Amino acid sequence: MKTTHHENKNFEKVIFSEKDLVKRSFDNCTFSNCDFSNSNLSNNEFIDCRFISCNLSNVKFTNASLKNVSFKDAKLIGINFYECQDFLFQVNFENCTLDYASFTRKRMPKTKFKDCSLKGADFSNADLSEADFHNSNLAGTVFNKTELKNSDLRSAYNFSIDPDINFIKKARFSRNGLEGLLTKYEIVID
Image (cartoon, rainbow, N blue to C red; front, side, top):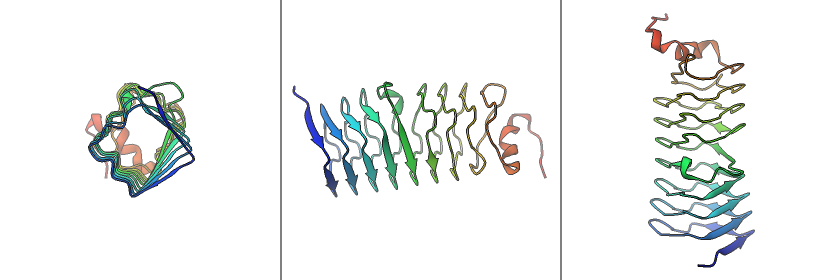
């Protein structure tokens, strides 16, 4: 099957919900107010693309390439980003809902999560060095053997990070966030 190539296109209010869109390449495309919920986007390539106000909940990205892709005001619930290709994987999120998404073993240095909900997300064995979690809700988010070196969690909230099993050298936390580093000790902080 031949790959269909799309370049410099704008897709607006298109409903792709529950469809199989495979073997496509999107270069410098913008998707606005599109519904991809429960779609199969496996084996697709997205380069320098933007998803604005889109619903991508439960999308399958198996073997997909996400190279410099930004998501703004998007719903990305339950996505297994760990199934994406590792080569040049680069994503950024602003005001997105990423609840129950999995980034297990992904290399994501310098990724920005601005004003995001990451409730129940999984960052086990991920490289988030120099990541920025500006004003993001990390309730129930899993950090297990996660590289957080030089990451900025000063305005992140509801997180629980065990310093004994994660790499947090020079990560930045606010005084208010220190409780999230001490959870396992069951210390009462007033």
